[in-house]
Image (cartoon, rainbow, N blue to C red):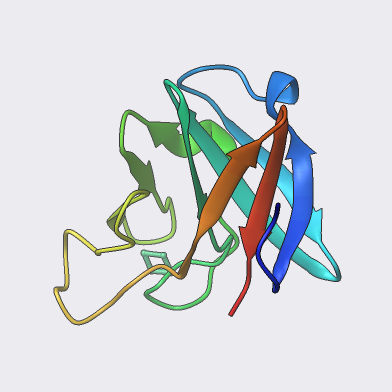
Length: 104
Ligand code: FES
C-alpha cells in the first residue's frame, strides 16, 4: 500500500538503468534518476540560480549545470561547488512496477 502523500510519477520500465527521465508530478516537473533498483527524484532547476537543467547533463551520480558549471549530487541534492546549496530531492517508492514520489 502506498503511504499518503505519494503520487505516481512513472512506470519503472520507463526508466533505463543509469539514465535520467523527466516526468511531471501534478504540475511540477521533476527528474527521475534510475540507478540499479533505486530511483532518485530531484528538481529540475539548478540550486545556484535556477537555470533549467537538462537530463543529458547527468552522468553517474551528478548533474552538471552548463550555466556556470556547478555539479549536484542526484542522491543527496548536495551542490559540489557550494556546500550551502542543494538541489531539491524527493522521497520515492517503487512498488508493483510503479514509481511514486512524495513532493513534500
Ligand atoms: S545557474 Fe546553474 S551553475 Fe549557475
